Image (cartoon, rainbow, N blue to C red; front, side, top):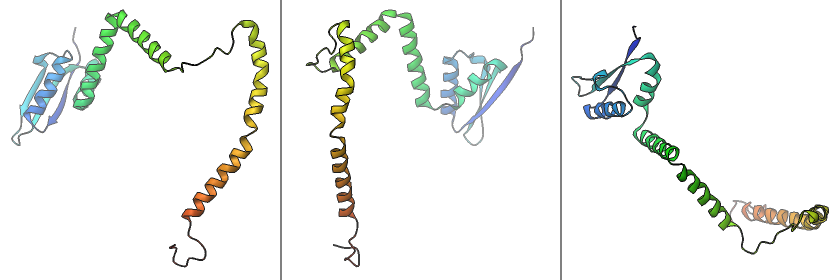
Length: 166
């Protein structure tokens, strides 16, 4: 059975850069004998990877990704592998997140509904509460508009100043 293979070429400015990419490819499962480095006369190097067509996208992504992004992906995949193999890590993380969220809640909170019977009374009081809260809204809006106009007036040049200076 013949397998369709292709060669992916990439040029790098130095032999060291080509070696880094070669080691990256080997770390991701590509065979050493399928990767070749050719030195050019101008100190640059060509890297040739013999691969199947189904691995073409994977090779391209490994060739053109930056080193910090590659390191982040490796760290991320390692964290996912650890979490998948250790379900207690996931459970502990969820419990820790719940504890942190609970600790952020205020300490003097009171239960708003003590029983299911109180729920209809509590819902009846919602419109009254909203009405009380909105009573002071027009005064606050007037105060805000006065503050904005004062701030703009302080920054705008006055009509009696000819050159815009105070």
